Length: 163
Image 1 (spheres, rainbow, N blue to C red):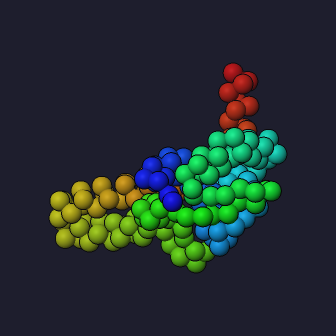
Image 2: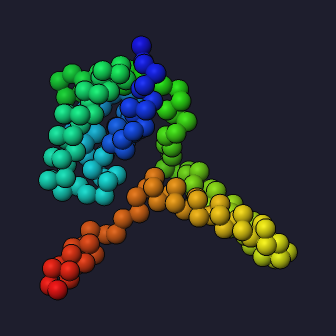
């Protein structure tokens, strides 16, 4: 039985959410190394050191916590999804390859309303459209972590070190 705190346990950490998302995509069963690769890729860093960090955090923190909540079972390197609380799926956005996310949809809709508002000169609608557009962009950035390419980060760090 999944306890009432399971939702907050899952939603309280991005790696746990990504693990549940991956397990749902793989019909509820996946090997730990595949989950580690998926999470490292989603976090934008797939080097060995980062994958090890993901592995350790899953093994020491996230998997035991989800096992205690009755959400997953872990045995011999394989994680099985037992049950996800209904209200968790409301907050998780799993987008198929050819679909668009809700944040992208709302950003596009906001742009349409913004153009319409500007066309008719309605300042209240302009304000509302810009507000919704900003919220959609912030949500999109939060969900997909818009990151700089790793090479440009290294260049920025090396420039700082030269100073």
